[in-house]
Image 1 (cartoon, rainbow, N blue to C red):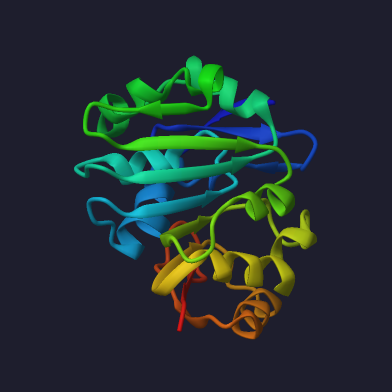
Image 2 (image 1 turned 45 degrees about the vertical axis):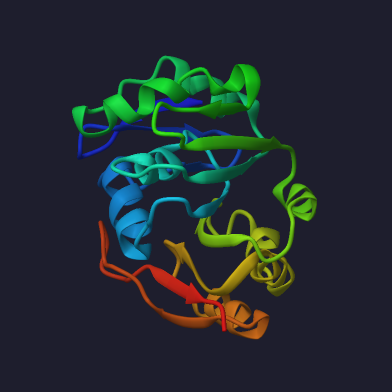
Length: 209
Protein backbone atom coordinates (compact mmCIF):
# COMPACT_ATOMS: atom_id res chain seq x y z
CA UNK A 1 0.00 0.00 0.00
CA UNK A 2 1.26 3.44 -0.96
CA UNK A 3 0.18 6.61 0.87
CA UNK A 4 -0.95 9.42 -1.46
CA UNK A 5 -1.87 12.98 -0.46
CA UNK A 6 -5.02 14.22 -2.22
CA UNK A 7 -5.85 17.77 -3.26
CA UNK A 8 -7.89 18.60 -0.13
CA UNK A 9 -4.95 17.70 2.12
CA UNK A 10 -6.28 14.31 3.20
CA UNK A 11 -4.52 11.06 2.40
CA UNK A 12 -5.65 8.04 0.48
CA UNK A 13 -3.87 4.78 -0.24
CA UNK A 14 -2.99 3.29 -3.59
CA UNK A 15 -3.71 -0.44 -3.67
CA UNK A 16 -1.05 -2.36 -5.57
CA UNK A 17 -3.44 -5.32 -5.79
CA UNK A 18 -6.37 -3.41 -7.29
CA UNK A 19 -4.21 -0.90 -9.16
CA UNK A 20 -6.43 1.94 -7.92
CA UNK A 21 -6.62 4.54 -5.18
CA UNK A 22 -9.13 4.01 -2.39
CA UNK A 23 -10.47 7.54 -2.95
CA UNK A 24 -10.46 10.22 -5.62
CA UNK A 25 -7.18 12.14 -5.69
CA UNK A 26 -9.17 15.39 -5.98
CA UNK A 27 -9.95 15.05 -2.27
CA UNK A 28 -10.55 11.93 -0.18
CA UNK A 29 -12.45 13.56 2.68
CA UNK A 30 -14.23 15.95 0.31
CA UNK A 31 -15.51 12.85 -1.48
CA UNK A 32 -16.74 11.35 1.78
CA UNK A 33 -18.78 14.43 2.64
CA UNK A 34 -20.02 15.48 -0.79
CA UNK A 35 -20.63 12.17 -2.60
CA UNK A 36 -21.92 10.28 0.41
CA UNK A 37 -22.75 12.01 3.70
CA UNK A 38 -24.17 15.31 2.45
CA UNK A 39 -25.69 13.73 -0.64
CA UNK A 40 -27.77 11.32 1.43
CA UNK A 41 -28.69 13.49 4.40
CA UNK A 42 -27.74 11.82 7.67
CA UNK A 43 -29.96 12.06 10.74
CA UNK A 44 -29.30 11.10 14.36
CA UNK A 45 -29.95 7.48 15.22
CA UNK A 46 -29.77 6.14 11.67
CA UNK A 47 -28.52 2.68 10.76
CA UNK A 48 -25.83 2.95 8.07
CA UNK A 49 -24.11 0.28 5.97
CA UNK A 50 -20.61 1.19 4.78
CA UNK A 51 -19.94 -1.31 2.00
CA UNK A 52 -16.13 -1.40 1.68
CA UNK A 53 -15.09 0.53 4.80
CA UNK A 54 -11.47 1.24 3.79
CA UNK A 55 -9.95 4.03 5.91
CA UNK A 56 -13.35 4.79 7.41
CA UNK A 57 -13.72 8.29 5.97
CA UNK A 58 -17.36 7.85 4.91
CA UNK A 59 -18.49 6.43 8.24
CA UNK A 60 -16.54 8.89 10.36
CA UNK A 61 -17.67 11.85 8.25
CA UNK A 62 -21.23 10.71 8.98
CA UNK A 63 -20.48 10.89 12.71
CA UNK A 64 -19.61 14.60 12.49
CA UNK A 65 -22.42 16.60 14.17
CA UNK A 66 -24.52 13.46 14.66
CA UNK A 67 -25.34 11.14 17.55
CA UNK A 68 -26.42 7.53 18.07
CA UNK A 69 -25.54 6.33 14.58
CA UNK A 70 -25.31 2.56 14.23
CA UNK A 71 -22.79 1.87 11.45
CA UNK A 72 -21.75 -1.50 10.06
CA UNK A 73 -18.63 -1.49 7.89
CA UNK A 74 -17.81 -4.36 5.54
CA UNK A 75 -14.11 -4.72 4.75
CA UNK A 76 -11.92 -7.60 3.57
CA UNK A 77 -8.47 -6.09 4.21
CA UNK A 78 -7.36 -5.69 7.84
CA UNK A 79 -4.24 -3.85 6.63
CA UNK A 80 -6.25 -0.85 5.40
CA UNK A 81 -8.06 -0.66 8.75
CA UNK A 82 -4.76 -0.87 10.62
CA UNK A 83 -3.46 2.02 8.49
CA UNK A 84 -5.99 4.27 10.25
CA UNK A 85 -3.72 4.30 13.33
CA UNK A 86 -1.06 6.49 11.76
CA UNK A 87 -2.69 8.37 8.90
CA UNK A 88 -2.71 12.18 9.05
CA UNK A 89 -6.21 13.67 9.18
CA UNK A 90 -7.13 17.27 8.27
CA UNK A 91 -8.66 19.47 10.97
CA UNK A 92 -12.20 19.14 9.59
CA UNK A 93 -12.40 15.49 10.70
CA UNK A 94 -9.60 15.17 13.26
CA UNK A 95 -11.83 15.21 16.36
CA UNK A 96 -14.29 12.68 14.97
CA UNK A 97 -11.54 10.40 13.65
CA UNK A 98 -9.66 10.13 16.94
CA UNK A 99 -11.93 7.62 18.76
CA UNK A 100 -11.84 5.25 15.81
CA UNK A 101 -8.10 5.26 15.04
CA UNK A 102 -7.52 1.91 16.72
CA UNK A 103 -10.70 0.22 15.57
CA UNK A 104 -8.60 -2.57 14.00
CA UNK A 105 -7.96 -3.86 17.53
CA UNK A 106 -11.59 -4.58 18.45
CA UNK A 107 -13.56 -3.93 15.22
CA UNK A 108 -16.23 -2.33 17.45
CA UNK A 109 -15.93 1.24 18.79
CA UNK A 110 -18.42 3.76 20.20
CA UNK A 111 -17.49 7.45 20.43
CA UNK A 112 -18.55 10.03 23.02
CA UNK A 113 -21.67 10.87 21.00
CA UNK A 114 -22.89 7.26 21.09
CA UNK A 115 -22.00 6.71 17.42
CA UNK A 116 -21.04 3.06 17.07
CA UNK A 117 -19.02 1.54 14.23
CA UNK A 118 -18.82 -2.24 13.95
CA UNK A 119 -16.70 -3.86 11.25
CA UNK A 120 -17.42 -7.25 9.72
CA UNK A 121 -14.09 -8.49 8.40
CA UNK A 122 -14.17 -10.70 5.33
CA UNK A 123 -15.53 -10.85 1.78
CA UNK A 124 -18.38 -8.33 1.65
CA UNK A 125 -20.22 -10.54 -0.84
CA UNK A 126 -20.58 -13.04 2.01
CA UNK A 127 -20.52 -10.98 5.21
CA UNK A 128 -23.51 -8.94 4.04
CA UNK A 129 -25.59 -12.09 4.53
CA UNK A 130 -24.88 -11.90 8.29
CA UNK A 131 -26.80 -8.62 8.60
CA UNK A 132 -30.56 -8.44 9.30
CA UNK A 133 -32.96 -7.50 6.51
CA UNK A 134 -34.73 -4.16 6.36
CA UNK A 135 -32.70 -2.19 8.93
CA UNK A 136 -30.53 0.30 7.04
CA UNK A 137 -31.53 3.92 6.40
CA UNK A 138 -28.42 4.78 4.37
CA UNK A 139 -25.74 2.85 2.44
CA UNK A 140 -22.31 4.10 1.36
CA UNK A 141 -21.34 1.84 -1.55
CA UNK A 142 -17.64 2.31 -2.21
CA UNK A 143 -15.79 -0.68 -3.75
CA UNK A 144 -13.02 -0.39 -6.29
CA UNK A 145 -14.25 0.33 -9.82
CA UNK A 146 -16.55 -2.01 -11.78
CA UNK A 147 -13.62 -2.71 -14.10
CA UNK A 148 -11.49 -3.94 -11.19
CA UNK A 149 -14.19 -5.61 -9.06
CA UNK A 150 -17.10 -6.51 -11.37
CA UNK A 151 -18.66 -8.96 -8.89
CA UNK A 152 -19.16 -6.13 -6.40
CA UNK A 153 -21.37 -4.27 -8.89
CA UNK A 154 -23.63 -7.10 -10.03
CA UNK A 155 -27.41 -7.19 -9.86
CA UNK A 156 -27.08 -9.94 -7.26
CA UNK A 157 -25.13 -7.79 -4.80
CA UNK A 158 -27.42 -4.80 -5.33
CA UNK A 159 -30.38 -7.08 -4.61
CA UNK A 160 -28.73 -8.23 -1.38
CA UNK A 161 -28.13 -4.64 -0.34
CA UNK A 162 -31.68 -3.62 -1.29
CA UNK A 163 -33.03 -6.35 1.00
CA UNK A 164 -31.03 -4.97 3.93
CA UNK A 165 -32.51 -1.48 3.51
CA UNK A 166 -35.72 0.09 4.77
CA UNK A 167 -38.39 1.37 2.39
CA UNK A 168 -37.38 4.85 1.22
CA UNK A 169 -33.75 4.33 2.27
CA UNK A 170 -30.93 5.75 0.16
CA UNK A 171 -27.64 4.47 -1.29
CA UNK A 172 -24.76 6.54 -2.64
CA UNK A 173 -21.97 5.49 -4.95
CA UNK A 174 -19.39 7.33 -7.04
CA UNK A 175 -20.04 5.34 -10.23
CA UNK A 176 -22.55 6.37 -12.89
CA UNK A 177 -21.68 3.57 -15.33
CA UNK A 178 -24.64 2.50 -17.46
CA UNK A 179 -24.40 -1.17 -16.47
CA UNK A 180 -24.13 -0.28 -12.79
CA UNK A 181 -27.30 1.79 -12.93
CA UNK A 182 -29.05 -0.92 -14.94
CA UNK A 183 -28.16 -3.48 -12.27
CA UNK A 184 -29.41 -1.17 -9.51
CA UNK A 185 -32.72 -0.64 -11.30
CA UNK A 186 -33.11 -4.39 -11.86
CA UNK A 187 -32.58 -4.90 -8.11
CA UNK A 188 -35.44 -2.49 -7.38
CA UNK A 189 -33.78 0.88 -6.87
CA UNK A 190 -35.02 4.17 -8.22
CA UNK A 191 -31.84 5.73 -9.63
CA UNK A 192 -30.92 9.40 -9.96
CA UNK A 193 -27.84 11.57 -10.44
CA UNK A 194 -25.75 12.37 -7.40
CA UNK A 195 -23.37 15.32 -7.04
CA UNK A 196 -20.50 16.07 -9.41
CA UNK A 197 -17.31 16.08 -7.34
CA UNK A 198 -13.76 15.85 -8.68
CA UNK A 199 -14.76 14.83 -12.20
CA UNK A 200 -17.22 15.68 -14.96
CA UNK A 201 -19.66 12.82 -14.44
CA UNK A 202 -22.15 12.67 -11.53
CA UNK A 203 -22.27 10.19 -8.70
CA UNK A 204 -25.35 7.96 -8.33
CA UNK A 205 -28.10 7.88 -5.69
CA UNK A 206 -30.38 4.86 -5.35
CA UNK A 207 -33.64 4.91 -3.39
CA UNK A 208 -35.57 1.82 -2.27
CA UNK A 209 -39.24 1.69 -3.28
